Image (tube, rainbow, N blue to C red; front, side, top):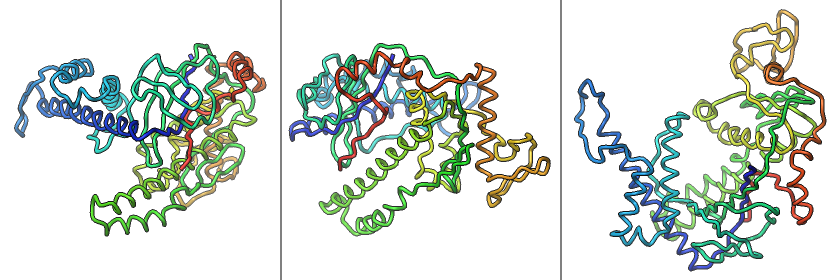
Length: 419
């Protein structure tokens, strides 16, 4: 099964904008109330069953954990007596509860943070089998026919399974989740291998000796953002001028995010060109972004880049794998000797055993490549073959694209940056 997401800029009418904003407000209320129920359940059951807590504890209803199914049933009953909930879209509210349930599952399984109350809801999802694109209009149950900027056609054979309506500073957008019933095998290890080391001084270093400097997306717009924020501080909260400045600041931040994502896709395409295997470090970038260089780390967006790189590898028949990150800057890639921990100001790797000298990040990238090749050799034999295997893997999809005259989907998270 092949799943893709296409993003389009919407051009809604005034009535459709009111419907979207109203459903966002209703979904925000549903999220906050459901989160309040869960937090109340957790707070009333803090102490263990075999001992008392030093702080006061109370046990309140519901006596069973309020999961998605119980909260969904309560929402159905509440809509019968609450006109405000009844005025919202049922599927949008149900999907909001699913998002909250997924957030709690990620908190437990992935170690992510506790879900928070929302001051503003930015999106809601709709499920239906009646989504259609007729010309420049998207036909859907809630908004009927809504106009969009059709930047590209949906390839033949794909069905629209879900639509996500998003509100941004630059306007309204729609993410179309499309699906095609086709089996695509995963890429296997082959051809030339490249290891990638992530850093702070330089964004990436490859085992081939290429060093990609850190792009300063935010730094270029920071002076203008700081100027507007100083002006915003002098305005009365909630006034018209305050709202206008808020929107200008949000537009600048959105433009920075769009430039960053566009750069990530172009860089991923460049790295996948002419290689058959890419190995990266298995790093928790959430913890990394909390360190001394948090601003620089967040500006590079390495977590997003590696997700995009993995996707681009999957459609270019490039084998992608993560390897152990420990001691990559201490091991010598030539002889395997542990040269000891280096200070951050030491930028040259020098081995006393074999005399190998190289840039510290490039040497670490070679260690990552060696570890990836060892793991790939254990899992599957590394064989020489060309990247033309993509034609056989996606032959049916490309034929449909050629017949319809539409371009083959080249990215999973393409954003239309029409500001």
